[in-house]
Image 1 (spheres, one colour):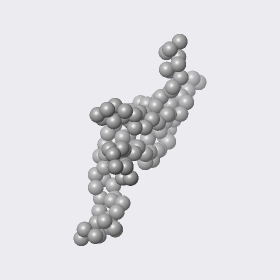
Image 2 (cartoon, one colour):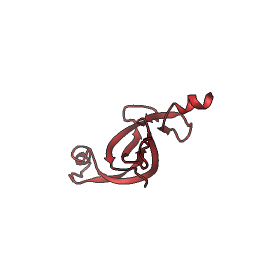
Image 3 (cartoon, one colour):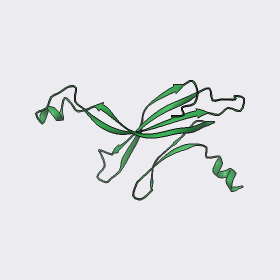
Length: 122
C-alpha cells in the first residue's frame, strides 16, 4: 500500500530552508542504516583565505581560525542476523551560503565520515 511505497524510500537526511521549507539537499543513507543521533555543533576551523583576504586586510596570521556550524549525524546498521549493531558511521555536514549565487542559495557538503565498530548513539 501507500506505507510500503513511502517506506521504500529508506532513511535519509533532508536539509530544508528554514523559511520556505523547500528542500536544499537530500542525502540517502545506505541500506539498513539508521540515524541514531543528530546534533548541531560549532567547531573552530582554520580560515581558508588566511593568506589572501586577511593579508590584504592587514592580518596575515597563518593560524587564523573561526567558528563554523556543522551537523553531526551518528548512524548504525541494523542487520537481521545481528542482535546488536556491529558497525555505524559518524557523518559531518556543513551548510554554507553559495558564494557563486546572487540569491540566498546554500550549499550542503559532507565534510568527512568515520566508520565505527557499533552504532553511534550520542
